[in-house]
Image (cartoon, rainbow, N blue to C red; front, side):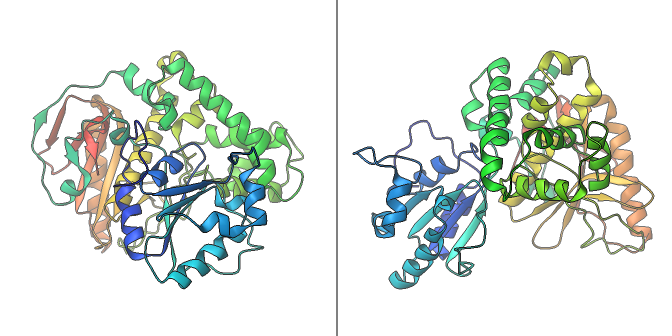
Length: 427
């Protein structure tokens, strides 16, 4: 990268995708939750920038300037970042038109932390603006994974058995509570916990209301968020969420819940894990529900008031949050190698925690366990599911792996199942 010099910038997994997008498209749009690092990544690839929420040298708001003169937004050395473009939705069509006019690649990088209403946007941007999704930091990006094992290498059967330094329970709890927010990386647990709670307050009291088309109830929104946190890493239907909420508010309307979830999605605060069926094609019937995730496990910690001290005394809750941490990282690593993250659950309740499917059709089955004492049971489940799928005529996984927390080795078991600590994994 040869963009604007960003002091202390940590390389992101998505950097390669942004660079590729600039090579093949006239513009790139980086989308993701507020505070995940989109702006810094965009600037690292840019030669100039227009910050929508900033001020001119005369103290004039840049947003107002953009409303009055789009030309001032577009003109500058390329690639040019336009930060929080959705504040002035007409910028999208202006960028698309300018890309066509110039006939050159890599002209603009747009960043946005919400999806604007469709009014005012005439063109999808297809063929001109490449969309790049960005998440919070994985442990590899934040420097908390040693990266001894590549997800890509696992699919190719390349793994060297090795003893490693095991993480402690306290370390894993800290990483989960702190989350993958770039601004939190060097904070202690108490400060990071406070920062995430403040983040939620801003979303509830400011951002959600701006994205919602009618008057939003702060009280109801907090109940929806609390229910999502209680159902983190579970296959909770809308009906289940509603039943959970109704216990505190008997007048909560199902349509309101659907709308609130839609808006939370538009703010990139939800990262649900869809059901996998594509390449199994077995006679075994599978479910349709997605596994619920907030965009970062730290959000669930803050919403549940799950401090490190409380989680040390409640390993059942922490197990759920640890699963969310691992699946956040698996999603990031999968996308980096051209794959996608799913989960698998059939109608008999048999399941696989995580499924990674690559673009070539190969898929991998992953179980997630906190303790090393759970590895045998997790491996047995993977081999059972492999055999069940094979007996039903489905395509079996190319790799089976237990992702664990408290383990001191990377190795391949006699049954063919790999064991990898999450703090050793990378793309």
